[in-house]
Amino acid sequence: MAEYLNTLVFGIYPYIALAVLALGSIIRYDREPYTWRSGSSQLLRRRQLVYGSVMFHLGILVIFFGHLAGLLTPIQIFDALGIGHGFKQMMAIAVGGVAGVVCLIGATMLLHRRLADSRIRAASSFADTAILLLLYAQLLLGLATIAVSLKHLDGAEMVNFMSWAQGIFTFQSGAAAFVIGVHPIFKAHLFLGLTILLVFPFTRLVHMLSAPVRYLWRPGYQVVRSRSLASGRKIAIESPSYGSGRPTHPAGPPSSPLKEAEPKREPEFANAK
Image 1 (tube, helix red, strand yellow):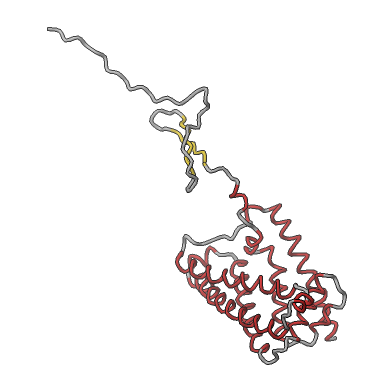
Image 2 (cartoon, helix red, strand yellow):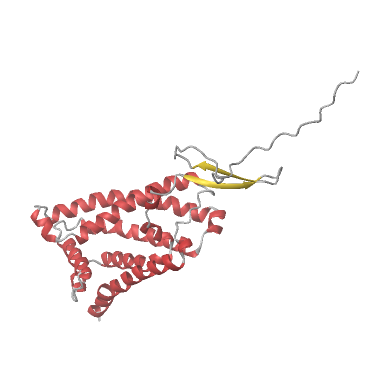
C-alpha cells in the first residue's frame, strides 16, 4: 500500500501537475489575456508592498533557479567538475537557507499587508490569498528540511532527489522509487511544490512567465486626442512618452496642417470731428 501511494504521489501526480501547468497557462493566455497580470494593489498601501515584494522576489528567484539547477543538472557534470555531493549539499543549505529567510520575511510582510488591511483584503480574491498561504507554507517546509539535512551531510539523499527529478523529466517509469525512503518532511515539501505547479495557471503567478520584451521595439510616443470645448474643433497632439526624448509633432495630416484661429477684429471707425 505504501509503495502504491508513493508511486501515485511521486510517479503519476508530477505529470498531472506539469500537464495542467502547461496546458492551463496556454489556454488562459489565449482565452483570458486581460487576466494575465499580477494584480498589484500598490495604490492602496505602497511602502510595505515595496519592501516585502523586493525581499520576496529576490529570495524566491534564488530558490527557484537553485532548485532548477541543483535538481536537473546531471550528476555526471558535478562529478566531472570535481564537485562532491557533500559540498553541493552544504552549498544548498547555506544559499537556500539565506534566500529562504529573506523570502520568508518578505512573504510575512505581504501576507500581513493583505490580511490586516481591510481595503486590500476586500480587493483580494480567494486565489490571491490562497496562493500566498501555499507559498508561505512551502517556505516553512523548505527551511524545516535544513535541520534534517544537517544530520547527514554526505549528500546521498540529495542524489536521490536529483535522480527522481531527472527521472520524471526523462519519463522513467521507476522514478518514484528514489524518494520512497526519504524523510516525511521532504515528501511534504515535494508534494506541496507539485500542488503549487498544479494551481499555477489559475493564480496571479502566471506573470512569472511574462517578460516585457515588447518594450524594446514599441513606439516611443503616444497619440493623445482631445476635443476643444471652446471652439468645438478637434485638436490632435502627439506627446512623447516618459524617457523617449523624442520631439513632439502635430498629429494632423501633412496636407491639412492645423491652424490657429485668427483673432476677431473689431470694426474700425473713422474719428469724426
